[in-house]
Length: 243
Image (cartoon, rainbow, N blue to C red; front, side, top):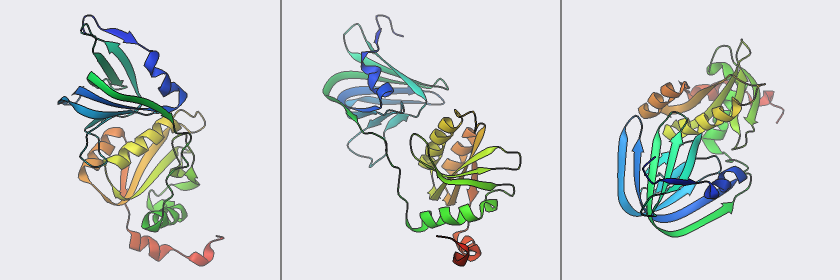
């Protein structure tokens, strides 16, 4: 830590208690990890979620943050010699996100409660139904344990087992991108805490998977499977269903 840097844990309670924190502040952001990135001083929205993720947003760029740190990570808030506040966010892999705050415009915390999860419809919902009926299209040795397997941050689309009895979490998308890999990574982190399930490996299944997502999935130990929706529909037999 920098000389004269003093840490404070007073503002970390919202992470442990399930609150989300929203801060609008003039800040400078520096990321150091597999690459380095710098955001000069400007007014931004900082979001700290109960799962410990930290996101830095601007007024543009749609839903995507300018920079972020995915869970699991730790956040320590400190004060420099000039009395400016600095957040130091560190991932389990050692990547670091430093947020130097020059001025705070707003700082609020909210309890969102337990989210019921995304209610899927259309092609994506039908893909889930079809893959639940035919899990061997994702792997020859897979059998279905349960659809919409619950976790603390939402349901995993499919939980399967292979011939060795190992658990397999499947996340299903129409188009697989980096966000889908990140979502499945969070599920795997939680599922692997359960001694009755671990070790749990992951499969990202989609009609199309972006090259960047495949690279990130490979780095996370996640298997990517491209599925043919039309072929799966040809295997479907609605008369064989109870519901």
